[in-house]
Image 1 (tube, rainbow, N blue to C red):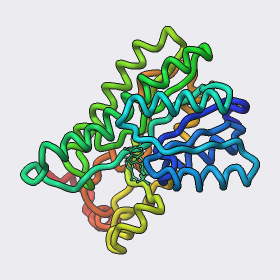
Image 2 (image 1 turned 45 degrees about the horizontal axis):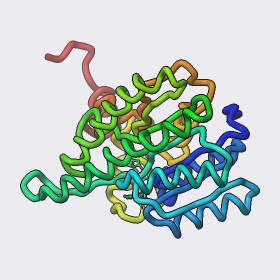
Image 3 (image 1 turned 180 degrees about the vertical axis):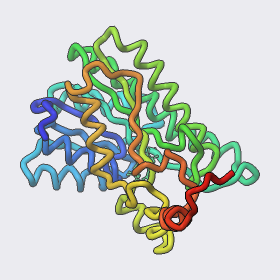
Length: 272
Ligand SMILES: NC(=O)c1ccc[n+]([C@@H]2O[C@H](COP(=O)([O-])OP(=O)(O)OC[C@H]3O[C@@H](n4cnc5c(N)ncnc54)[C@H](O)[C@@H]3O)[C@@H](O)[C@H]2O)c1
């Protein structure tokens, strides 16, 4: 597929991780120069080096998305080394598995800082550079948890990801007249290499049975809608989101084989 992005430049946070590296790779395949920033600068550099080896233009650096000044410096370096900035993709995020009773105030702030202040900094530091280009696109990575609740992380993650949607909407309003579009992608269960390494075989096999599509989401399937929101294909979309969850949001509460078995043998009379 051709997204119409050749010659553009993108900054991706969380570039060392599963979704960030897949996004950087898809940008590179589309002829976009990429700047990967991550708290794990070595990991981001490994991804950038692999992309350069395939002929792409890619740089990488260490950056903590919670720090506005560090974000502004990353934007400035991207403009200097890659000749400008058209897209900012805020991918870095994550949570902890604590309950309300165990979550400390400090942990609450840590998760909010990473998942909500991080995207805020992406917009705040990125918008002036996009304005200098006459426009561009910002994509935030939220989560299905922002519409429902997280089963993998705690209340702080759910709250932060819900906040990402409000941030995205409001920023879209303020930046619309600058020709800067702001949209969100909301992944569901994505089988990144990092996810695969930390879950049990039982979880690996159970999750797909509860999903309409019957399989985990792949990181590349989150990258594709991110590029869609950067491309002219979404030129009238701003302040909105797309869910990428193998259908989890439809609300099934059990495995598909159970659902099928209770229907196949049921009488043709309505049940109460
Ligand atoms: N994997 C999923 O199932 C899933 C589901 C819903 C939402 N998401 C969201 O997608 C995004 C990416 O998830 P992933 O699965 O690729 O995770 P990942 O753990 O593979 O990657 C996250 C990256 O963010 C980096 N990072 C963490 N804190 C940082 C900080 N303060 N500053 C800069 N970088 C930092 C990490 O080093 C890592 O490389 C996150 O926002 C996550 O909440 C993921």
